[in-house]
Length: 113
Ligand SMILES: [Ca+2]
Image 1 (spheres, helix red, strand yellow):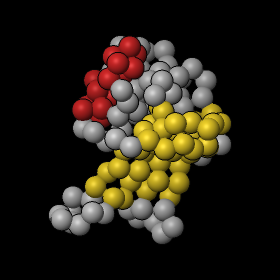
Image 2 (tube, protein in one colour):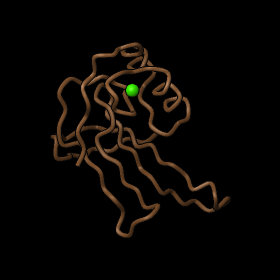
Image 3 (cartoon, protein in one colour):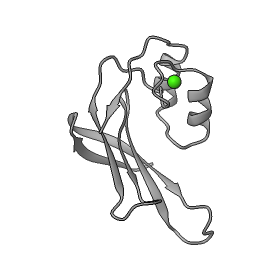
Image 4 (cartoon, protein in one colour):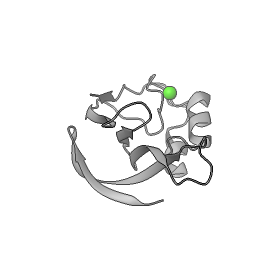
């Protein structure tokens, strides 16, 4: 997985892992339509989505109160739903960080623009 240095509204610069989602509807065509920028020990700081918008929709982290790594659905816990997202390779973090927070239920929502 490649990494990239970036800053978002929340802060930075961060060294983020870039997780690209491939358009499986076009086999053989190297078309990536979503980029997730994941910062270890923090979570997703940016998403770029070309699926329905030109120019792409940019979502950036603008605030955070008490982060739990791996709370992908932003409902304040790291549970089985988050595990399924992690396992589905849609938005992932390093497993050692995910495991550290798995079971936490006192996370605070990450705030995006
Ligand atoms: Ca969750």
